[in-house]
Structures are given as structure tokens and as C-alpha cells.
View 1 (cartoon, rainbow, N blue to C red):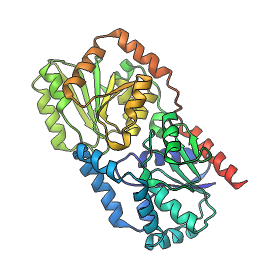
View 2 (cartoon, rainbow, N blue to C red):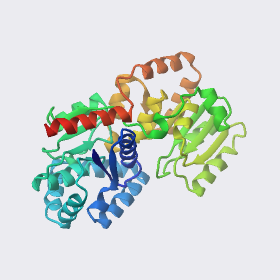
View 3 (cartoon, rainbow, N blue to C red):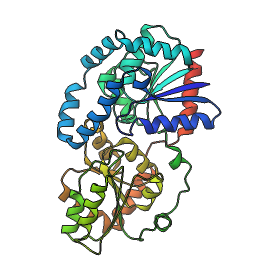
Length: 374
């Protein structure tokens, strides 16, 4: 079977699941294309815009919440669908499709619904159009299309929200979260073993994840220093040298603190295993990967697409959404000093009603393709 995974280069949040599914497809003996959606559509401006608009919004999270809430409507979806089938994008997509003829198309960005599905359905293409909901709890209304064949989402809260948007129960499928290969195939070491392998000290460790864009605040670290909490802090993400230097300079104010800034790493799962708590913005991949390895997550900036994360945390008690750096520090301090709280957290993490497996995701995907062909 030949499958195409289309992503949008707006951070790593859409590429990582597309790559995870592509890898799992190939492990199962299938063929795949892994492509940027706007490259297929020959739309370099929108490829550039999505990348840089997302970086700008990460630097201004309050503006992001207002702007994306305003843009997140069925009306915007209708405008996108209108132009998608009338511009050159339709011609270029159909030309690509005739050259490749995939058995299905899986889009990991919501725009696949309002663009790819719109073109494919209007053109009566006999190819299933699937959407993987990368935000895991919700999908922007701006990607709505009533004829999408399947919407795959890894949480029951997400299923509920998709049904409320207007998708049918026939369209929506609860699915395993597609773990990237490096995490799915890794050896599950203990904290002590992971720290030893990474050359870290065996003490309370905070993993501060600034994501694929390397954008984030040092406010929490400042609070730890101010309150003389000499823990071990590891900062990962696509960090600039200026960002690394900023964290290292701050760390000098509290010599007993250990701050490591490895930046972008290919073995992020090992760093998650080494930590006691992971913190950062609400990136769905980092969050779900952390939960899959049974590490709690503290979200310090809740972006619009991740707005339902707090409801999930309230229901399952596996993390926190706290914007105030002082309250973040106090919450982590309480957790670090309480073995009871840590044991309760492990129980909550172990009982989460979620599946994490890209191979199981592919099994579901292939079965849906076959069911639609019957």
C-alpha cells in the first residue's frame, strides 16, 4: 500500500507525527511519501507564512491566543475551501496526484481538511482523505470539511470536541498516539540509569523544553535561583547560542544548581526518562511523549489550540497549567518535597486511558483504508 503523509512546517508539531506514521508504515512493509503540503500545492508564500507566523506567535503568546481564537471559525474554513478549489493549488495538487496515485492521504495539519479534502472531494478523487489531529484535544474549526473520510484523534476528550464541531461518529476515530521511532523503540531505563547514561547527577531534575523553535522564558529558572532551589535543570529545544548563554549566566547566581543546555537532541526520550518533571509550552508531542514515559508535565504557556489541556489535567491529575513563574516554582517545590505526591502522580500516569504506539496507529489506518474500499 502507498500512503502519503502531508505536514505543514509550522514548528515540529505536524512533522513529527507525520514522520512517526511514515516510519511505522515502512516497518510494516508499505511505501510512503512524506511531504510538506505547501510544496505539493506549489505555494511557497504560504509555506513561508506558516513557518514565520508560528514563530512570531510563540514569542507573543497572549496575541496568539486572541488571534487564533478569532481565526478559529467555520466561516474561515469556508473561505479557505472557496479559494482552495479556485486557485492554482487545485491544478497543482491534481497534477501531483495523477503522478503519484497514493492509496490514501493523511494530513497532520488541520488545513488538510479545508484545502486537500476540498480539492479531492470536488474533483471526485477516489482516495481517502484522513486527518490526524495533532493538537490531540481539539482541531481548529478553520480546518472543517464535512466530507473528510476519517478524523484520527488520540484522546476521548478530543473525540467529544470533534463531535461537537459537527463531525459524525462515522468520521471520528479514537486512535493510539503515534510515537516517534526514537521513543517507541528506546529501552525504558530508570531515572538513575537515564541520568547516568546522559552524564547527569542523580538528583531532582527539571526538564525545560523550549520546543523545535527554541522559544521560551527563563522566568521559572529565575524563581528557582531566587528561592535557592539548587536542583538540576536541563534545557532542550532548538536553542540559539544566545539562549544557551542566558541560561548558563543565570545559573552562576546559584553555584549549587546544575544547568545543562544540550539544545536540540535526537534522544529526547532519554532526557524525559531522566527528569522528574517536564515543563514548557503546550506542545502536543512533548506533552504526550512525556505522558507515555510516565513523567508529569507543567505547561507555562497555554496556546489556543491546546486550550483543553487544562480540562484533561483536571480530570486525570497528570500535570499542571500554571502561567505565574512563582506559582510554578511553589508547585514544583511541593511536589519535589513530597514522596506521597510523587507516588500518587505515578499511579495517575500508569492508569491513563491512552495508547501510545505508532504501529497500532498504522494498523488502524490500514483497516480504515480497506473498509472504505469495500
